[in-house]
Amino acid sequence: MPEEKTPKMSKEEEIGYHKGAVNTLLNERNELVRIIGIVEALAQTHLKRLEQLGVKIAKAKK
Image (cartoon, rainbow, N blue to C red):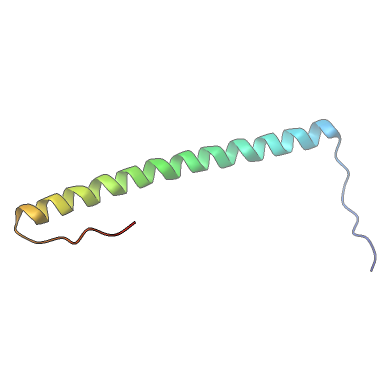
């Protein structure tokens, strides 16, 4: 099986590439955490109101 030819990057270029990828992924993770916080707050608000209206809510097991 012939070896695939991939363009060679200098060490500095490869470091830059990986640093950029990690930076992008960290920013994406931070945004996801922010969105999860918003969804959790909205769900809690609805659950609290349902309980105020007399609806029994079963607590989910973790």
